[in-house]
Structure formats: C-alpha cells, structure tokens
View 1 (cartoon, rainbow over the protein chains, first blue to last red):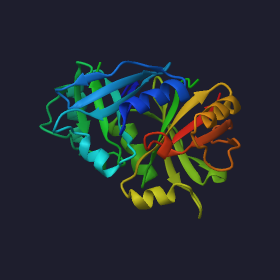
View 2: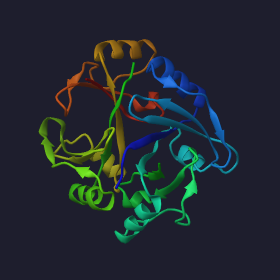
View 3: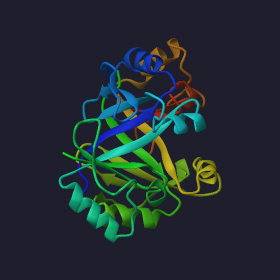
View 4: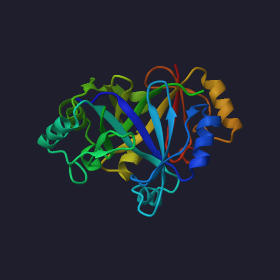
Amino acid sequence: MIGRLNHVAIAVPDLDAAADQYRNALGANVGAPQDEPDHGVTVIFIELPNTKIELLYPLGENSPIQGFLDKNPSGGIHHICYEVDDIIAARDHLLSTGARVLGTGEPKIGAHGKPVLFLHPKDFNGALVELEQV
Amino acid sequence: MIGRLNHVAIAVPDLDAAADQYRNALGANVGAPQDEPDHGVTVIFIELPNTKIELLYPLGENSPIQGFLDKNPSGGIHHICYEVDDIIAARDHLLSTGARVLGTGEPKIGAHGKPVLFLHPKDFNGALVELEQV
C-alpha cells in the first residue's frame, strides 16, 4: 500500500540557521522559504537525490508545530510522509486494522496541494505518519 | 555533500508487532529480523521504492537504544541517515563548521558493513544524523 517516502519533516527553532546549515555544512540543495498560512508553517524543502527533507517553522498564532518546539526547544524530527495511490482506500484499510486517523478522518489538502491524512503516533511506534495521495 | 537518504530509523517497543503493522496495515515490503550484536540492536528493514525504514529493537544488556525507549515507551523516530561519498572529508568539513561528531570521531563499521558516523543532535535541529559512506 505505502509507496515512496515523500519526505521527512524536521521542526526547527531557527529556519535561517537550519537552511544555512543544510546548504553549507551538509552541502545540500536547499529551496526558498514558503509560507503556508493554511497550515501554520513556513517550510523549506531540501532536495535529496531520492526524497526530500522538509524544514518546518511556526507561522502565525496557532501553528500546529509550536507545541512540539515548546517541548523540544532544539527542534526534532516531526513526521514522516509515505505516498499512497488512493488515500480513501488507504484510510479505510487502516481503520479496519484498528489504527486511528487524526482530526475528522477526512483528507485535507496538504502543503503540496495534495490530499493528506495523519495517523496517530501511538499506533505507529511513536512516529507521526502522514499519508499523501500522489 | 550529502547524497541520498539511506534510511529513517524508528525505535520500536515490540519488533514483531511493528513488522506485522508495516506488512499488513501499511502493506509494505518487510524483511526478516537481523541481530546486530556489535551494535546492540535487532533490525528489520522495510524496503520502500526510494529508501528504507529501519526498525530498531534493543539487543543485549547495553543497547544504545534502550535509553531512548525508556524515555519514549511507544517508540519514536530515532535517526536519519544520509549517504556521503567520503566520510573522512565529510567529517572534516563538518568539524570545520563547528558541528560535533559523537564518540571518538573515527568512523565505525555500521549495521550495513560500511563506515558510519553520528552527528550531535543538538547541532542538527534535535535530529540525530548518521552519515554512511557508500
């Protein structure tokens, strides 16, 4: 069911510093910051040859990653995103196994303009898992 | 400098349950458990089309991931591994930027039989980063 690893998201306390570090210390291909007001984050994508790293920084008053940064002031790996062909079929199969989908259970349009869902981390070894229909 | 994302490692509290979940709930291609006594872990690799997930479970008395599981009883994303062509050149460049390398600073032979180093998570947005020479 799951396909490619679309990205690994890392919440960072200083977006400019993190971008500089990936560009200069790690020598990676770092994109420009993109504000995503609907998602409460500013993101920078780092293009690796086989996948992406998504640097996340809070945007606005109710950012969904502010609480994570409050608990993890140095930042941390926030979630991993797997691609699926059919997000409704994937959701229904996961629900049938007892896994919990966060929020209303209906896909939202994610930062890439595609339908996404998040799965409960307690059901997935403490890892927050995003599914994105590609 | 960094190349492909080689793997994302997830520490899990129940290796059989995690393997079943990736196989059946997430429909992924799950390998057999491999004991790595030199590294204090039993690992299962999940092959995605573009990279791997490495499930980690403690092996023996002094497993390096036991403390992580004590702090995170549900498990959690433990580290990400980037590939490099020349691990010594990568290390020396990173040291010149002020980044800290864990342990002695000399590469060890990792679970894949290749030289690896780990970078200090506080220097990398709270994310434990492994470098593997491929």
